[in-house]
Image (spheres, rainbow, N blue to C red):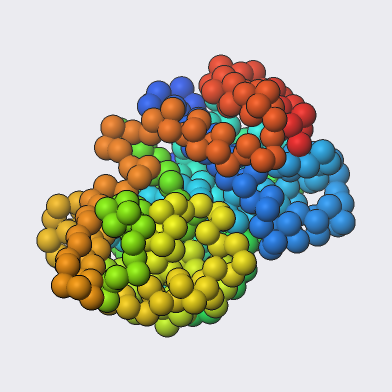
Length: 469
């Protein structure tokens, strides 16, 4: 298990560059704005985790982890029992992702960067296990976002792999920082994780299954295990990006690969994170908001509508999602929250959109189907220019009596170019956790999270999570 092969190379591999970057940035070097963003995203993530306690697949995973058992090292959201680091990562990761409510990143080219907060449970669990300070945990979250962004930038968007595949390396880096791995150990942890974290993109296509909501958590669990193995001397394929039988066809952007060890930028990747107002895919946030506005404009009178034209930004990802048969005709909860047809229709009918809108297999409701069946999907480049990378939506309703109604949402709820708003995050947290936590328990968790930048350990937060369970 030696690193003798390193002496045969004249330049570091991509894996070694990532390890160098992961260990080169101290908590003190991270901008205060990024630490504040990490704090608010942590609170948002915990709220999403409590909301996940009502989701069937998430409950199945949590119960399975409880049955498997393990050393009581790390807290599990909504539970009084603890599990080991790897299993707590899986359970918490599935809980926060269950309802598609956690944050997302995008770019002006219209590509979704994924959900980096999927990996916040790794930092929370590792910080608890290794007794690290709140600032250390927040710094690990910021660095996790940065590694996530760099790997996603290097990844071929047309590859058969889903974007969550990069989260194995992110988890390995996050744990590696918090447990104090050396450069060699960190390199091996990243290499081991990348070698065992491939997820096919089918998890997010067609008849979408529960695999979508558990995919990242399984990958993160594997990345945690990779870091633990590397800490004991287990080595990984350091040339996994460069070798002809490695991942070069998946991570094929040479320019992005060259920046793996670049310094932390003045505006880190975490600054591009946006929170969700609605439990659905990121590209559908404006579509829901437009449906709600049309309901208000029509005073709930959707029965006169003959046709609805749903117009969105002209991006490849939007075209693909509009044309996906599994989303046009959703047959599951997972497909419904990824269906523009369903999202706009149920928002238009109900005038509200939350977890309740999925009750009783609402995607099969004849009234909802009637609205979905009169929808035509379209794109408009003009929306790209007016709201770059924000996935805007315009609804144009033609009524049987000749009337015409139009609403347009350029900025989806949860987005602000001035950063995240603490009041908005706290409001969302309280809404998501109200049925699971009493007021004082919610207040204790909020206070513990907001105090984390100056906390010597995560103990107050984990205690608040346990006492509220």
